[in-house]
Length: 135
Image 1 (tube, rainbow, N blue to C red):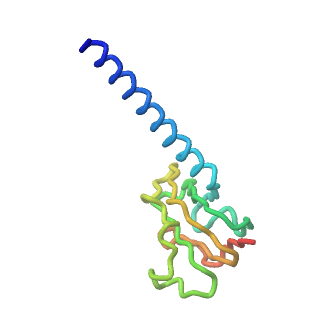
Image 2: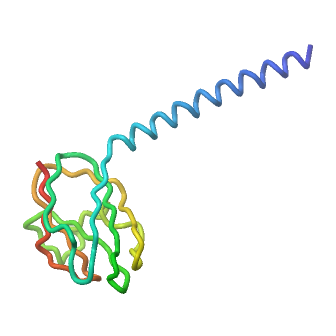
Image 3: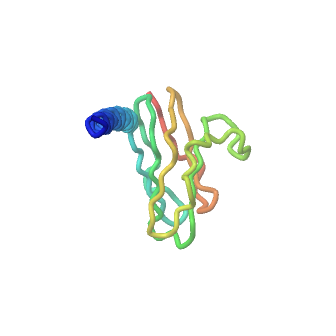
C-alpha cells in the first residue's frame, strides 16, 4: 500500500510540475512575442542607419560593432532632452555590456511611446542626430 501511495504522490507531483513549467514557458514566449528587435550597426564614427521609424511598442536594441576598432555602446534620449545628462538617457536601452569589435550585444526590453528620440554612441563617437521616430 505504501508503494501505491508513493507512486501516486510522485505521479501527481510530476503532473503538477510539468503543468507549471508549461505555463511558465508559455508566459515567457508571450513576453518574447510582445517585443521586437531594432538592429543597428556601428561603423567607425557613425551608425549605418541614420533614421528609423517604428510603431509604439516594446523593443530590444541589438547593436553590432562593425570594425570600429574599439568597444562601442548605445544611448537613446527623447528628442529635445539634454543628451549630456545621464538622467535623460533611457537606461533600459543601454546595451547590457559594451560591444567589442565584430560582436553584437542587446539592450533590455525598452517600451517606446509615440514621439521622436535621438541615439548615439559616446564611445565611437557618432553623430547625435540619428533619429528614431515612434508612431
